[in-house]
Length: 339
Ligand code: PHE
Image (cartoon, rainbow, N blue to C red; front, side, top):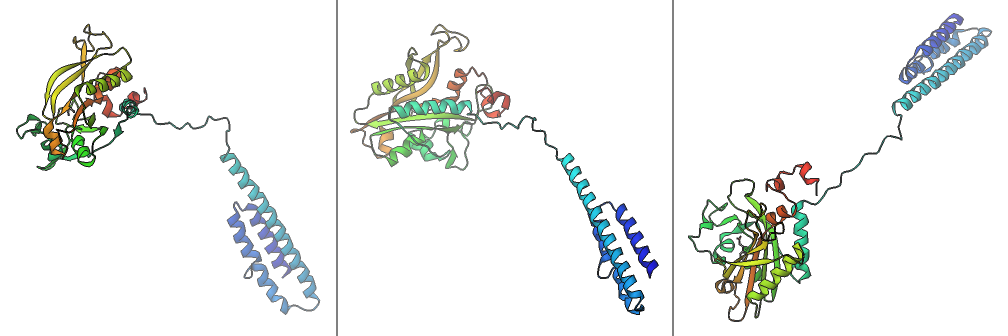
């Protein structure tokens, strides 16, 4: 029995010093010191010993147990230290490494100018309203006095969804929706996307932006239209900018005009920017057609109004010297980061 105890001690101490991880140590603890362990097995046989032998073996067994326990504690300590050191090395933090920067988003160039234009009109007492991009034929064409054979109604120019619904080709349907909902005095602008079945090239895109304007009240005249647009253009392009009206035709305004702004590059001389014209067309406008007022339940004998529609892309392209409309929609970060 003495030998058996000695053997257990030596074996256990050897195994404990070789063991490489905490789990293995735990297993050894169970193997030697556990309830079903080797030491316990020997102690269970103590009953067979004589009265003289029992205290001697008992003492020896206690010594063996405390030796093994001490070795176990020592090995555990050493291993824990090793693990910690390894962890510290692996998780070393270099506090001098530069931090990660978060990229902050920017406004799209179209949004920059759109916001500016909204501000100008808000300052003149206009409301900003919006309308649906998927629109009924009635609002996009019929109520705007566009006759059934009008070229804009052709499938070559318009994206139809069903016979009755389409992607709006202009923001003018918001005129109708507004006049149906509000009583004069009305003073609104309505910015938004419009769609036309155009092939994509440097100056055409099947989706682009317009800003519609509508004013309806008693005694509104062409001079109110002129004053409003002059004020707007001077706010946008500076005090010395000039506009001119050219006669034009729109089915929903009478009389109608196209409005040009004097080329700020050559001041009317003619240059590359304005294609030699000296003037650049930016707006369609006119006095709201009496038939359109009637369609919306507004009496043209009592009220009159003006409306205008301007194309945003052209204005933004000129502002930032962008020569290809496709840049707006490609979302190339090299382009977007310049604004
Ligand atoms: N909707 C017209 C267009 O897209 C512009 C316009 C709006 C003209 C309002 C007159 C009045 O060309």
